[in-house]
Every structure is written in C-alpha cells, then in structure tokens.
Image (cartoon, rainbow, N blue to C red; front, side, top):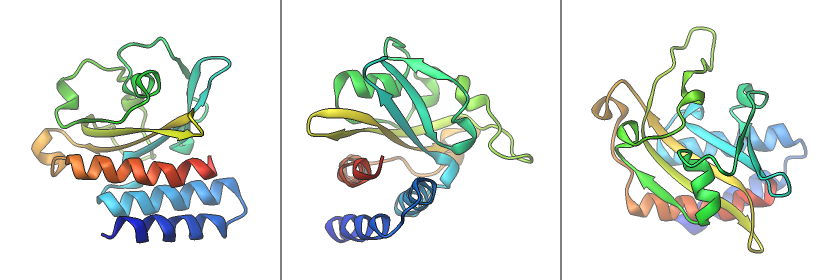
Length: 168
C-alpha cells in the first residue's frame, strides 16, 4: 500500500460525503480494509478536553455506553491522549487494561471476543488532541487473532489519523 496515495484517496472520499455518520462508516471500513480487520475491530474515540473525558464515536452501538475519565490509568485510549503518542501492543490480552467495553456484544449473534493485539494513535490537529483511533485484532487467543501489528503499520496508522482528524 502506498501510504501517501491511500491517505489522499481517503481524504478525497471523506470530503465528498456530507453526513457525519456516513463519513465515520466509510472511514472505519477503509481503515479496516487497510489493516485487514473487521469494522468491529476499529474504534474511534472523541476527547472532550474541557471535561477531560473520552467517549466512543465508533462502534456506533457504544456511543451511549458511557465515558472514560482521562485519569483512567489502565485505559490505553486515555494513555494515548495523556502521552500524545501512538502505542502498539501485540500481547494486549495479558496487559492490564480497562476491558469493560470488550464485554459488549456488537451484534445480536456475535459473542464478545477479547482484544489480543492493538494499535492506538492520537487524533491530533494543531497540537490539540481531538480523540483516538484504535485498530485491534480480536480472538480467543493471540494466534487465532491473526498476525502481529508491526511498527510500520503503527506509523501508517499515525499518518491515517492525520487525515481522519479532519473529519472528527
């Protein structure tokens, strides 16, 4: 994948859409295809800096699931915001983390699966954090979740986040 071309196509595609939900769905679908994960393995969070809370934008079903305070120290999303940098963890299921959202069923017939591997990148514009994008691989075990994420993929997610933040 030529990253610059991918980001340009993503920006052009998202610019052509007028509804926020349509942009979000297109963004998630495109990012999922780029990293070979399902839309349920992509999460996008909004950060309210004034109230210091984080909430889900995607998956849509989790929008009303509550918020996380920035002080939640076992949360990778809040750590990403606090430290203003990207993270990669290919043994995430063994890392202490806030796992409450992993228990939500994303569909009527789906069973919740634990996140085994994850990349997390800040959505930052002009030095201000607007949110976080995470791409994960879920499964019953690390092997069943698929390939490990690489540092190159983490860097690519960071570049994609630079495009995505324009539409959050």
